[in-house]
Amino acid sequence: MIANTLNCHTRNALIPGRKNPCLSRRAYSAPQDADSCVSTDRMNRFFETKSALTRNRIVAAARQWLGTPYVHQASAKGAGCDCLGLVRGLYAELLGAAPETPPPYTPDWTEKRSREEPLLSAARRHLIEVEPHLVRPGQVLIFRIVKSGPAKHCGVASSHDEFIHAYAGRGVIESWLARWWLERVAGVFEFPGVDEWRS
Image (cartoon, rainbow, N blue to C red; front, side, top):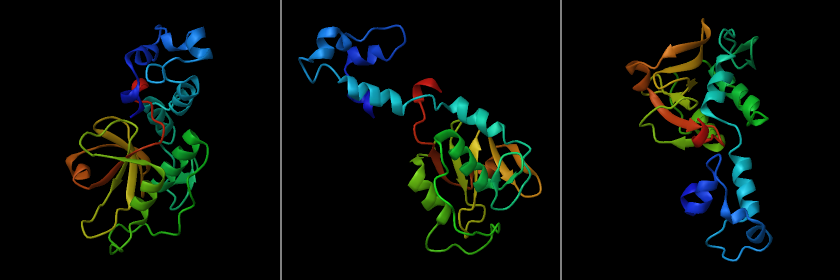
């Protein structure tokens, strides 16, 4: 992580109200020591990639989908979506464009597991997989409902013990992340660019 590579002066500059001695006029015009000062360009890139995508923002955006009717393979807030459509819609809303158009899929959780796992594979291409030790708000959760079946359900954690998902017959709802669900977690993912310091 980039924060681990920053020296103490630079880390202090990342705290609001503290000045960065590396960005003084002398250091800015010609840094004397590459090890003691992080370049302005690198600092700017750091702030650009860490801009405003917070856990609170993800959860607030997901809650705006509550009440959306369940429509298989749709992804339209207020009009209709399924569980994947909810995550794809949030991705587009938060990051600017949907990651990819999925191939046709069935709503059947009990179908046989294929050699490839389309939902998990897509998540690994476009999200950041993390260890599932502690669910955090704003994380994408992928579930394998039937042990022998594929991972075919997903949602977004809204707290440590609740999540938002689209459920057939009920639409987009917020549910308790009870033991039944936790035992079926097949993967936990972050949206790219989540700001850990401003959750």
